[in-house]
Amino acid sequence: MKGVIGKRVSGECSRRALLTAAATGCRRGSGRPVLNVFSWAGPWGRVFQQSLKPMFERATGATVLFDNGWGEEIPKLLIAPPDQPPYDVMIVAPFAVYAVIRRGYFQKLDWRKVPNAKLFHPGATANWVFEDGWGLTWPDALHTGIYDTRKGARPGGWEEVLDRRPGLYRASYMSLYTFAAARYPGRAARSVMEDFAGSFAYARERKRKVSHWWATSPDMAFHLLQGNVTAGNIHSVDTFGLLREQPRLDVFLTPDRAHFQAIWLVPRGTRFRELAHEFINQFASVAFQREYAAAGFPSPIPEVAQAQAARDAAWARVNPHTARDFESLHYYPYDAYLRHWNEMTSRWNQEVLV
Image (cartoon, rainbow, N blue to C red):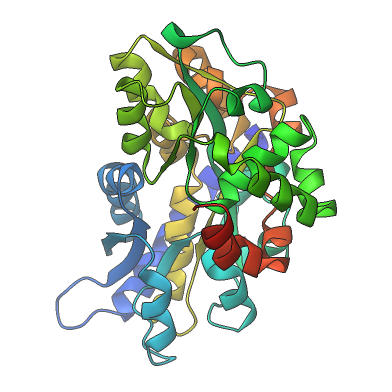
């Protein structure tokens, strides 16, 4: 690991010179080149604006503008002319983008221009998106349980949670997985991949056990504090403020620790290919990953995760930081989800969320 970092530092001057030349070549008049980046709103947008933006701009002399939102990025890309993409870099989710990648809307990355990607644990990049060169993947929010300590002891598993009239996330990728973890504790991912129909049927049969289908983490927190639900699932990144402000709430994990998969991609047709690579490289740097972890996110760089865990016991409870954590790191079974797209969308809405 240290050897990789050393090589990164030794080549910094030549990299900066190359990027400065690339940026200068893209100038219009006296203005600096502007890299347009789509980011998710909320804590992602905040930490990118506060920390990643100045790091990238110092390294390149370019300007980065973030467009923060939810869900509108892919439609914008699909209707744009091929040589005029609305963004130069995009953060995307598997559901929204796997099929779009395969249709040729993005360009492959040159990993020699993203040397910091070598710092990521192999478990973070063990998927076809990275292996085929399309984008940088990393583990985002972890499948996490939350409960009201005044309403019962720590749940022993997800089947017990279902018996407590829980609140579950409306999104199928997370809550179908929750049902699968209740059905086959410790084997949720495998059960979804090998017996999707059985997992879906289990969710449909037990939907009446769910007291509330939440749309956002604050929505779930509200119903917990009002006593409308006593337990449920939640995104790990949204638990830290809750635990600090509401000592009656606590979190729990089970062996079925799936992560949401986040991806950086570069659209086909960008005028700023070199700068796009460097933006992703800055995201993958130790310097930014320290800021990212401090904001509550998991980091795919083991040394960063270990240091953050030593500083923050709450962070360590829900984010991977030990060698064992990283060896068992995995994402939700997105390929299985996409093979059963109808069940994950229309049938979920019509048969489970009713």
